[in-house]
Image (cartoon, rainbow over all chains, first blue to last red):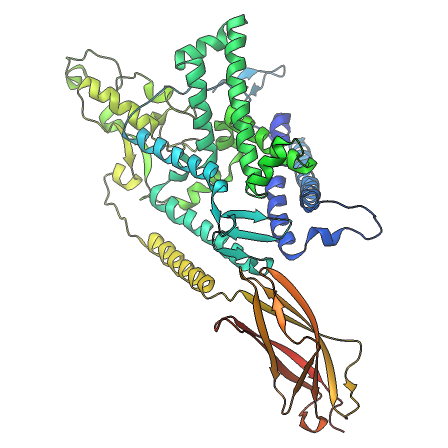
Length: 91
Length: 463
């Protein structure tokens, strides 16, 4: 009986399994990090731009989300390639 | 579960999502559920309109880095309370789940709340279950387009109201409404309103039970919180089986049937599309729609209610049931303890903070009078809701002198006040190279508003 392997999961579900946990992680990371550091203080001085506090929080959140997306993509990639290589005969 | 043969002859276990049309249901638990949903929705939309002491009662003012909770103003320094609150929420989840099963899913979860609201709107516009199914199968006509357009317009309007209210927890709602009417919303505010509106529209309008089934982590680890005495929804096969239709006047036992007439109403009302008669499944969100539906059918058949009902595993197996078991008592005990500590801590919280930073440019200085001097930068945080005048003093060394260029210290409400002070001491009185000193800050108009900060005073050391 063939079981459903990760490489046969529909693309939409693969996308959600990357986007959703990384979203939750980004919320936690933003909450903890921005309680300690004011995001406006983290804008580099030599960038002569003026952004609103809401913009700073938003951009910070998206940076965290991007980082955790990269992490989740790595996990997904290894899961799929592992199951492919392990299911090949003679492996 | 449908399987189909792929080219390789292997069964493909993936099936495209079929829309679920939950049938209308009424009964005791449905009324309870609707009450819960309406109350929670009401709280969500009304809370940003509440005011307290000149500011919005509940406001997470991110730019100013302050969280307002009625009379309590939390600063980033109070982050520990947020952490404690999260731990408390987690423990409460474990406690209530161990006791009452997936009561959160069926009665309180935002996904359920908004999905039921959207389902209600859909019913009002497209009609009952069979009418909705017929409409979706019908060819595209002007009437169909009009009906669908009306539904989506109502849905989108509700989503925008939801998104707007969400942002109103972070930006005061009167300011936000003003900006909206003048079309002068900032780009990021607009983005977040639309983002959250879209999420509501997508989750409540389309995703629905798929959020519960595939996205929600709670559904996956509930088995870790359940035990044999946890409340759950179950069908009773010993009473209901064998299933089959029969005439109302017939005594079921005489035709070799149980009480279940196989009407499938329990399946039709289920928002996640399962058959509870197959046993408890992870998709079941314990919304109790099947309970009410079956009870109604039982009433019509003049059979006793409760063919599908709330029960526990032990009860279903005929074993003794325990309410106050070790798991429950431990959870409850820890919850009460943490809750008590949190309340005590917050109620004793002093809305004043003093930070002392010693000037590190020089270890110490010698004044013209031969005294050893250390310089400090003081940051006074007045976390109270009114301004105060403060008295500053220091001790820790015999004959310690506090020199400050500020005659009086007045700090506005919610403000940070920075000042430079100098401590001077006679070298003779210094017992060691580095001595501990204390700064005392006392509000003149309030006895309990005071704080202490420790610092180090550095001298030449014994020769």
